[in-house]
Image (cartoon, rainbow, N blue to C red; front, top):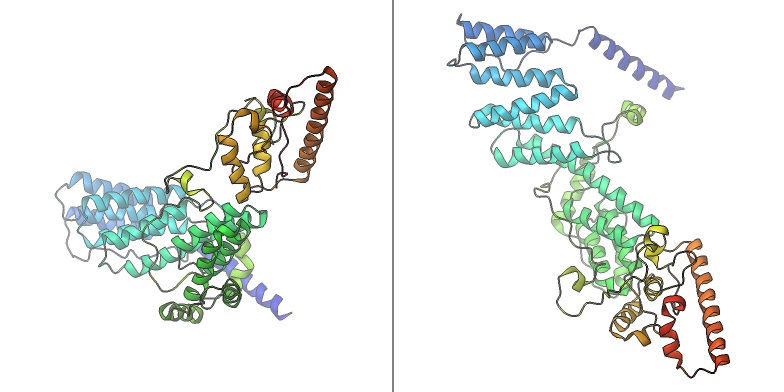
Length: 470
């Protein structure tokens, strides 16, 4: 009962605030950059009149007056102030159109007056324009990326400005939202079973956004993705677990990470003192959403940033995502030598247009399995044995290629039940056709070797893959 009463009081207070704002009770806000010089110069009179219009919300009249001042008194000492006031009028007017015009005017002011004190404030307001329009992590993040760039510009172009601490905190809040978006995408791939894609996303989150509140969870899912990808990624898995223990000592996965490192017979590091102090400070100063925010949160497009870091240096450079570790080193161009990626000629180029399973090595309906189809189906498991067969199949002559089912690169998407059923059906059909061909050849009294028979019938009855798609 008491909770319902509190919600009712909060709703009434919010409604009263909206109504009073609509009637203009809170509409008269003083202009924070007036000119206090007492003079009756015409340009000063025009500027004061425009300031009063801005304070009363008559932004169109204010801009007309300020443009009159700029065009009439081109040598006035108030030109810079007038141009800044035009930008401030658009900023106060708000809305998508008003904020876009304000950004243009602020950028013009910085271009014409880069050494004035107000230039840093103009750049900070550009950062604030995009920060205010930033949406939740599950929506479009264009404004978040723009806010990240503009807040960085405040710190780079005006490092001694009083607006740097505010811009730095806004940058942390923005990167919290951007990192959350990347984490959700990686988590989706992880639950779907596309572990190379999940590992690529989580590695980017951990590298680009170390202050992200969910970096410990990202590293944990990164290690789990490497574990599912096979033994050759054991070193990457150990590195992710080591970072959890060392850099995120308050993470929920620290004990599990230590246990896995011990099981893998890897050294268990101690927590970094600087990382421990920062994590403790964040735990003690982390905000909590208020009651009104919890009630109205689902209906607000603004993201929640109360989990964002309050200390630490945010990422000042946008890192380019590296080549995923699931890509072979030779194919990625990071190692020279003989590549284990085989290239074969497709028997029928129309198959990929007529069947969605062509990439997994499934032949089209009514068509026999070709050597390349068997190759893709056999390699879907993505193990080292399949890669070795791929190299053998690429180097072998055409007569022996039908007997050896080579493998291609692994796929990120496991085969479905329907794909497995179709695969085994094709295996049975190929075996039946091959048996019929052998019986016909025996009846005809042919002395052709079995390998040659298989080679001549490759276009119709190639040997099926040794392993089904996974």
